[in-house]
Amino acid sequence: MNPSNYVILSALLFGIGTLGVLVRRNAIVVFMSVELMLNAANLAFVAFARMNGNLDGQVVAFFVMVVAAAEVVVGLAIIVQIFRSRRSASIDEPNLLKY
Amino acid sequence: MTGYELNVGEAIVFWVCAVLSVLGAIGLITSRKAVHSALWMALTMINLAILYIANNAPFLGMVQVIVYTGAVMMLFLFVLMVVGVDSSDSLIETIKGQRFLAVVLGLLLIVILVWGLGSSLSGLPSVGLDAANRVDGGNVQSIAHLIFTDYLLVFEVTSALLITAAMGAMVLAHREHWLPKPTQAELSVARFKGDDHPGNRPSPGIYARHNAVDTPALLPDGTPTEASIPGALRSRADVQPVEIEDGRANEEGDSQ
Image (cartoon, rainbow over all chains, first blue to last red; front, side, top):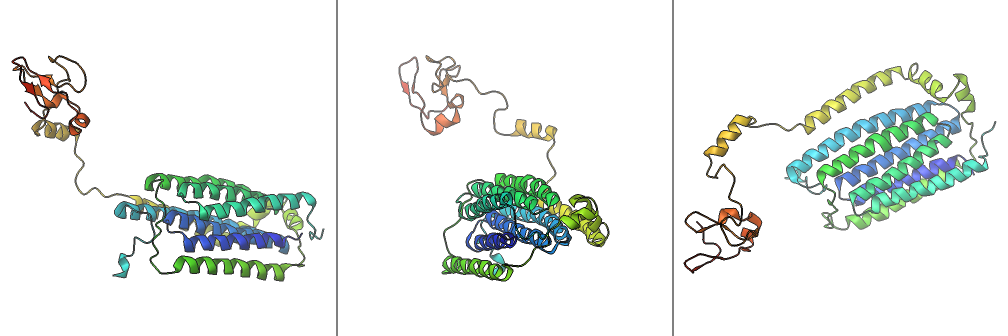
């Protein structure tokens, strides 16, 4: 058993989050998968901070959390706005930019 | 302390929380309903908070609980409430074979990441954070020291980010009024000028033989009035025929 197990766990969670972003069609679930990826990166930061013995990794993880919170607020507002005009939360719907 | 060996307690915490968080992540991407996905995600977040605390990061663990399982999950659930709980995935593939390829490549990414990191990190010594935490008297104090010295500029820029995000959310969520909002006086005038009778409608069964809901009331001249029957019964044509005194049966639908 080694602290790098945390990094491997974070890689696993990151991969699962990527899979969710690629496979799911519901915009909110896609957004939650992005959050999962951000959290996996945070876990890697924390584990590396411990392995290297300095706290910079934890500070960076803290800033990642701040950015993630701001991103959730704006992203969910955009989803609600699209839902109001399209009556749908599917990410296949807003394809009008194509034409 | 070398920090290389984890003690047994941490190993138990790690394996329990790792299994639960991976379970939550898999539940998040496989649940059919978005609400279930949100609940699975909350499970993952709480387990990650425990793992942070096990990793000598108690401050981050607490922030994780407050920010993620508190604020962010609450936001997600509120938006699900607005968007509708039953908004499930469409099964139509816009790009042919996209789902299959996504699963294959995603699993490949997982394998490569886990295998690469596992082989490159195994046997790497770990310093541990005891010394770094001891400098300023604790984890919170040490992080505060770093944020307000080395990362002060980043911290200040973060405030601009947060206020921009708040403004953006307000602008996006704002709904424009195209017409002026009607006042109560205008609403009342509109009600009396409209075609509808402004007062109460007659109750069903008045002057009739029965007072059941589906029996129309009789007007002073003895004819039944449809306005006394609830709209749901009227649209189902579920109205009792009324027998008027001179003997002719009045079919439903015979209006006043």
